[in-house]
Every structure is written in C-alpha cells, then in structure tokens.
Image 1: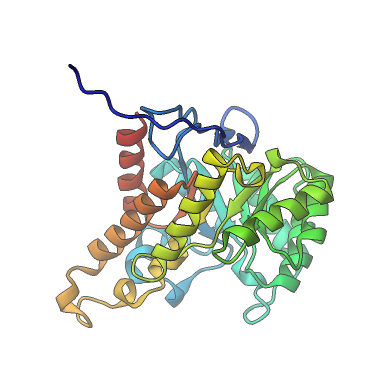
Image 2: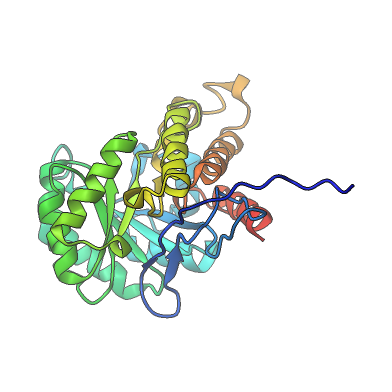
Length: 315
C-alpha cells in the first residue's frame, strides 16, 4: 500500500492585495495553506523582495559592507532606487524617510513628499514609502506624501493605532495601500485592521507589519506571532487576519553588533561581510516560513540568496 502524506483541510485563505500599478504591479497573498505547503493548497503569488533606500546618506549608521554596494548613489535616493532595480533586480523599492525623524534632521513633510514624488516618477516598480515610526511626525509626513503622489498608487506606513485616522484617511482619499504596524501581538494587529476597516479602508488596501526582530534579537517572537496569525487566518477563518504580511527586516539585522563589528574588532565571528549577508538571508528565510509575503531587505547578496530560496520552495 502506497504511503500518502496526511493533508490538512484549511477553511480560510489569505486575501490578495496588489501594490503598485501597470505591468510591474505585484499581487501578494492568495495562499490557501501554510507557507509553501503547496501539497495542501495553492500559493498563487510567491513572496516578493523590496530593497531599502534611504532619503539621505546613511553614513556611519550603516555597517560598511551594507553601504559598499551603494556608496556611489547613497546621497541620491532616485539614483539609489534605480540602481537597486537595474543592477540587483529589486521587485519593489522601500523609500525610508529617515530625514524626517524629529530627533534627527526633522525634515518637513513638504520636503519628504517632494522626494517621494521624484522617486515614484523615476521607477516602474511598486514604491513603498516608510516613515520613522514617530507617531506624530508620521501623521504629518505620510498624508503629505499621499497627496503629492496621488497618481502613483503607493504603499505607505507604518500606520499605528495612534495615527491611523490621519494616515488611513489620506490613503483612502488618494487610493494608496497602507502598512498596518503593531508591536508583535496578534490581537493588536487584528484590532488595528478592524479600526482601519471602520475608517473605510478596504482589506484589499491593507498589509500587516507585525514588527520584525532580527536573527538572535527577537526573531523568535516575530515568528511565533506570525505563525499564530496564519493559524487564525487559515484554520479559524478570522477574516481580519487574512491579509498579506510585510517584514521590514534589513534595518533590524544590520543594526546589531554582530553585523557592525569589523573583522579587526571581532575576528572570532568570521568575515564581516559574509556574516552580515548570512544573518540577513537567514532572517529572511525564517520570516518566509512563518508567513511573510513581502520582505524589505538591504544587502544585494542577501536578496539574491533569499530569492533563490523562494524560487526553490515556491517553484
């Protein structure tokens, strides 16, 4: 008698969300089983990778190996985004508005909106515009970005429980997708999705950011929450959790000491470039296995490794 793999029946499915527009728009979600369990369901839209671009030169904020591939364009977000697409095959760009941080340059909403519009006009892949997670400043900056880029179908975030009304209304008014961010908690993620829905934002315009920890720095918490999110969505028919997940992991990985310490400072850890790339790629794969649909990553080689794993698992 031939052995048959026992199969689980799923009563739910992840709702599809399309970001960007035109020929290179990306549809996320649509799964009817756990991540890559294609023997039990379908995964019509494989996970995608966006590459991180800052609106200012990161300088010493980035570990040298992470900055090296972009050193010739790091002061120009338009050129940086174009290089990610042309040279490294970025499927989407995540523009991080670091300059707007009130504890840093405190750039104006108008300045940030102008930068976002320039980048959006210069690329043909979906553009994600991410603030600094400062609740008050993001509530000023992201609506300005939404208005200035009304013609570009952006994905904007993070939207949090303390500023969802202003940012959600702007996204709704100018037809953008939002990234709903909550602090590693399934119930808080669900509640924010409910609040956005009550505001009028459709499920087809919401991505979930559960907050991401890097390898060795909270990844297990993120993984557990994402796992529970997917279980509720697929086996408990919780429609407010049946949404694609985005993970902003590049910044979390490359800020830790194991990535920032040089070969001279930590020779016992091996080559700095190799260890950083592997830490980012391993974090990415772990998040994919937990249910991530869109990864925001930093180093081109880590992106390459991750995309090869996606191809291997998803076919």
